[in-house]
Image 1 (cartoon, rainbow, N blue to C red):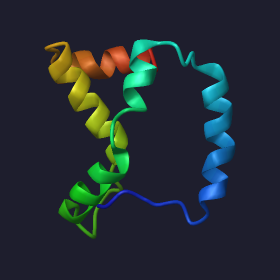
Image 2 (cartoon, rainbow, N blue to C red; image 1 turned 180 degrees about the vertical axis):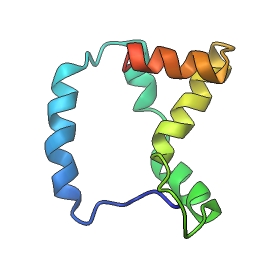
Image 3 (cartoon, rainbow, N blue to C red; image 1 turned 30 degrees about the vertical axis):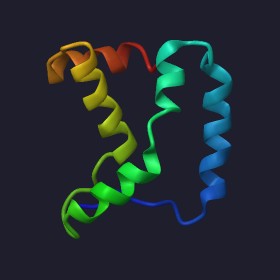
Length: 88
């Protein structure tokens, strides 16, 4: 199923501001995450999702995990374990 898009984007900003206050913007992966062209990725991948079924994870999260997987030559399991342990 396609990713859910918030009805009111201002609601998402409330939570995003709090998370940004917790993360260190000097970290390499933080800067890298803000360099990924998320809007272009969403435009490209959104049509590939089915209309029905379980809601998918955000496209930005999936693209970021794939990037880390190839950058560090990790398995899927290692990427998920690392992401749970370190949100950067």
